[in-house]
Image 1 (cartoon, protein in one colour):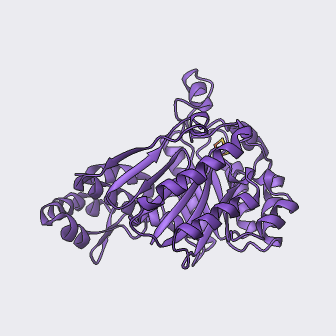
Image 2 (cartoon, helix red, strand yellow):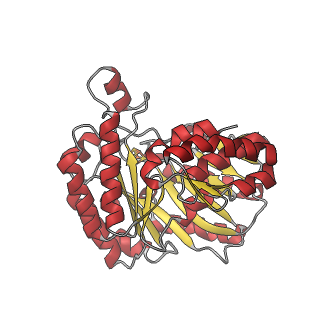
Length: 369
Ligand code: SF4
């Protein structure tokens, strides 16, 4: 089964740390939405698996779309694909878009999961990051969604922000836990050179947190969330039992996916396809890029995404799909990490214990072919 993703590349204001493909030219929304319908028509045959399991609206800020527009995309997907077994339809929202009216309209659509970018419940931290909402708006938005009948809510938080660890992070964690949401994504702040934060860092106006601080905050987040009953099932993701993100799990298990909109990528088992145009260009004409993945690239991708998950990778699967030479080399490469406790072996599966997820990139890099 495959996953379908719609990228809504608009934001009312740009956050200081964000390097996603997005634009503040919200006047282009109607034009871009029409282009996305066109792209959906043109590209739906890219997938060889026509059965869709999940639909996801990400961004940017999908809550800048009217719920009726979101439903129009879902309806068209139902006409083009077999959507009889769709399990999850998620929309990312910003807290300040979540009015009672918006919730009422959204609850009348097929959307059954909400992902909200809260990031922090400390107003000073929110202001520092350039977010357009405050802590009170975020809490109210979750309550409104609950009252509107949404029972599968995920929130994002960001840690590793210089000056906002300690008590600030603790307040955020406790505040989020008191909301009782089903899923929490916790990301370490990364500062890319092309962002406002990146430029401030280069001028010395901003500091990165130290590695030790990163680790301490990661452990604090992990401890608070796992103690509250959330399963740490992927490097950045925590879920109550039964509430893992099914859409993201498709990416991590190698399923096919179709991404619609500029900034979205697709994969059909052998070929990757994407559109990375500026929003203004996409609004006029769509240009695609694509590449065939080599066998080795697919193996590296399998190792990378698997080791970010609690289940890890299956060495027998590697032997079967990529050959015993690769499997033996990887088996050998795992040994030093097993000895240090950075990898665990369970049956045929190698996995990074969740408390060591923070160093997953180092381990993954060593095991690459
Ligand atoms: S973080 Fe989200 S809301 Fe902020 S600019 Fe990026 S996409 Fe837009």
